[in-house]
Length: 163
Ligand code: ADP
Image 1 (cartoon, rainbow, N blue to C red):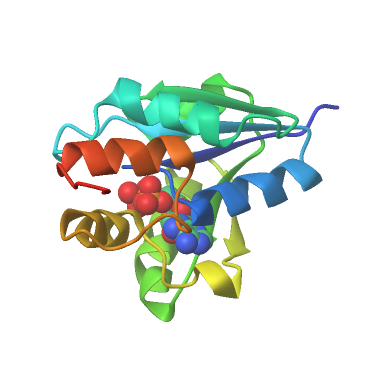
Image 2: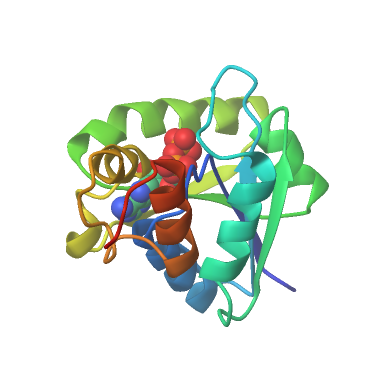
């Protein structure tokens, strides 16, 4: 049996913290579908197409990984893909409450779909898409936090002069 899991998220944009979770999940499961969530209530910095493309580039060479996007209930998407579980990442304690609530809700509405959590690597514990966007906006160096394509896109977006 192929073990397939779904790692859903906004990925606005993907950071090295996300890639670390993807790499570790791919070592355990046969197939990891990274699925960008289209949330009509959120106004992302990057378009769906940009976020998907960044993920494709950032995960190049990691075996068993594919990139997709979806809208609607995560659990419906997970079922449509015949996946066995949802993957999420945990950083600080502050992540716990929201993730616990969502995992419990998903399990209840979807007849037992489990969420599997990967603890962040300590070097990514303070890394988030929002922090990266904030630092980049004011010209801070984010080169070690994101992949090359995301770095370039952020510099362009905020018109930061590298010279
Ligand atoms: P959301 O899906 O809540 O909008 P993201 O797209 O940023 O948030 O993240 C998707 C998932 O990856 C979430 O479970 C989040 O906790 C996790 N995550 C984000 N950044 C990191 C990191 N640096 N280390 C570990 N997990 C992370």
